[in-house]
Image (cartoon, rainbow, N blue to C red; front, side, top):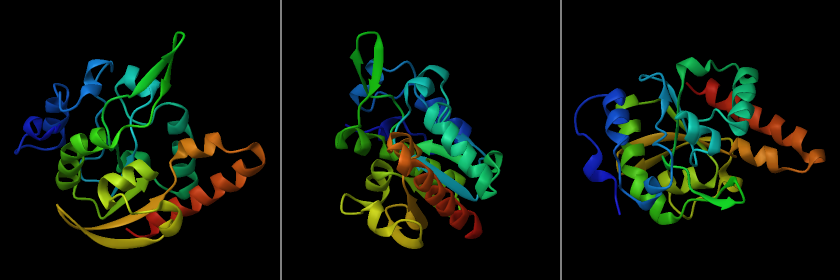
Length: 205
């Protein structure tokens, strides 16, 4: 499975987004409402990569507009980052979920989904050409940095890495949804650490 055949070779981010609406690169398109492509400035200095859209994102067609998106927005504000100058996307562009009654519950994408969707992510990075890529959580890290990469070990520092699309600068941190899952007594510190990581990213560009 691969999205490669749907990815246009020419054009900018707008052309990528339009083409992605018809992507059948893996099975996730069959149950999802729509493709949720990246959004933001097409020449952003910072590009943030999450895991996949959630239920709210799937319905609205925009990344990071649900509960985790609210955490991210608040943290970006505190870190001094104007979201309108950033580009935000996900490693996987369709919502993977399971039904529980009438509710759609998030399921972590399979490795096959991440691999299939990687051509879109690589194309976004090439078109935006950011100074720094911020990976939010393990799925985004695995997509761009390989399965051996551990966010917990290399979190919050800027580093460079050779990739199939060239040498890129990265900073890894947790996904904002992880903060929502923390125990209440740990959540304030978890959020503060997340803001610190985003401040490091802002200072690096």
